[in-house]
Length: 114
Image (cartoon, rainbow, N blue to C red; front, side):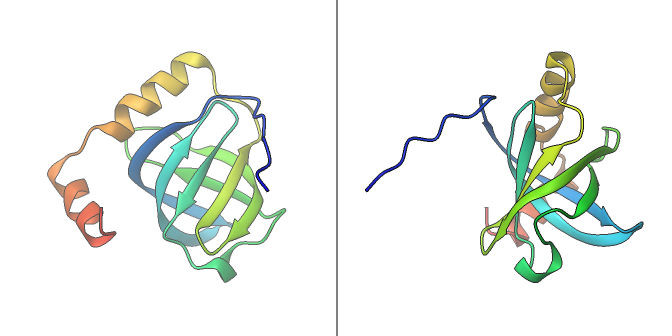
């Protein structure tokens, strides 16, 4: 049986390395897979590293820190809900940034198998 899920914000597919911090320490490096005004999905992380309700910060080179909370965690990564929804201009900047692919980033993406 399929279930229709209505989301508050449209999601966009992206692929870029992100750095996550939890409890003021580096919690891991993952792959930003989807983003929206209200949150994002990060893959290629170990499931046990994050639990629903964890407060995390993540950043992408070229963009500032974004704070959020883990809203789900599973074998395919984690879902983050941003503490403050992004402004439309911030989403556009972030989208352009994560869709650019400098050579160093291309090497990381190859490691993730994309």
